[in-house]
View 1 (cartoon, rainbow, N blue to C red):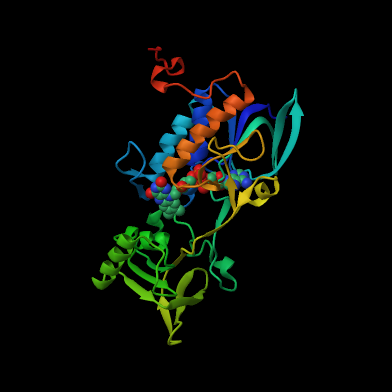
View 2 (cartoon, rainbow, N blue to C red):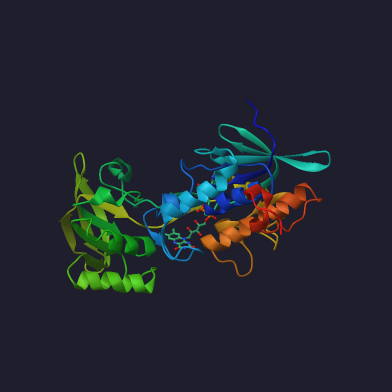
Length: 341
Ligand SMILES: Cc1cc2nc3c(=O)[nH]c(=O)nc-3n(C[C@H](O)[C@H](O)[C@H](O)COP(=O)(O)OP(=O)(O)OC[C@H]3O[C@@H](n4cnc5c(N)ncnc54)[C@H](O)[C@@H]3O)c2cc1C
């Protein structure tokens, strides 16, 4: 079945894409969302569903997965189709009645659209793997580079590898869940939030976990499942075999714009340049969220939502110049059952 032409095709169903879908519906524009992950929510779902977020307007404290639940409910109230598990790999440009017509292509389908909103975040991302030979054989056998459900580590001896926010956050969040936590990092400088580093150092001093610097993972041991590791001190060259059940590398992730980088968009250091209206250099293609850059850009959920609102309102005006850019106030809108003041 050929897909119908939508006003806006949104690439990426992270928080930015979801809020874009909400705004499209509020403006009466048809839209669809496409994401290569198998769930909506972007980084919040894939990387930190169980972490609390404190800097989203209206929520003093909210679990990432709960925020996604609310955003999805808000975004999908007008039943915009969501195409999950589909990576966007191509874009065709044509025109219809003097207006651009885009076809967004995935491996399985083609989606025609009058405009495109790229909300691809950090791109189609994958966790950075441990630089060990045969590392793939340990996935599903105790090696986890993403933590979706902390209860998997209940009562387990866990080796955390890394010195960034995720490693430090999990050292704190697995307290009381894991039986034992050893965290190693190859140097004594950390890329994590200072308050969390201090917290982990205090936990380590209190014997509630162990933090070792200048140690690296050399080898994983086991038959069917991970039973232990060999770690090496990169200063003294001392080797030590440590029994562990799980290895959790938190080495950041490799993100790639992938095919999007080939579309003729202006790109600066892997990010799409946009104007104040979130327009890219290609008329009809807008971008918002972590994937964009402009002077003063902040990579936050709050800013992504604001950029999505700006992008969608300008896309609506781009498709139909008679439509106002200014959306009006939702509190006055008939679409929500309200009457105009
Ligand atoms: C550990 C951690 C903690 C954080 N804590 C906070 C916090 O407390 N407060 C805060 O404001 N921010 C926080 N952030 C940052 C926040 O998560 C990001 O700013 C936000 O997720 C950006 O949203 P986005 O929708 O632009 O991108 P993303 O969340 O990255 O979503 C983009 C989506 O696009 C999809 N995609 C990309 N390329 C393609 C393609 N070619 N085809 C199909 N789909 C594609 C991806 O699969 C992804 O689902 C945190 C980030 C991390 C990693």
